[in-house]
Picture 1 (cartoon, helix red, strand yellow):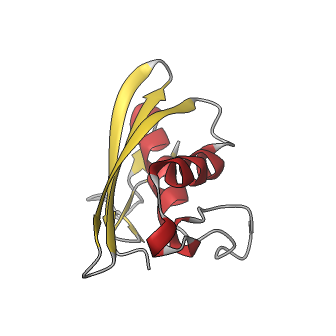
Picture 2: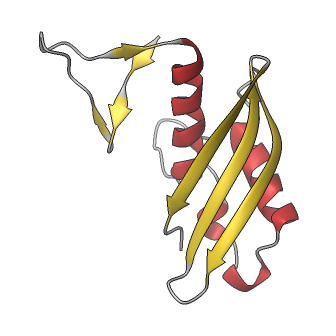
Length: 117
């Protein structure tokens, strides 16, 4: 079980306690956290996060992105990355990344639509 996080903050229930999640939702949240956080940016665990923000925009190919995603999710034994799709808006330097996963035997899709550079 873990606390539900939305927009960078814990979600509080009606009773004022943190809202909890488990199972598939918890694992998807862990995936999103690891892909969204810059690797080395979390002081308590320097290995947490991804190198997506460190990639050279002009050299970003799907193999490089796939390697960065797999590295970020390597410690999640229940999660396998089966593929990715990218859309790159060079004008705004925004990467739109769709990650295809198998989580505990179930297919899942995570979309990361964020300005990474």
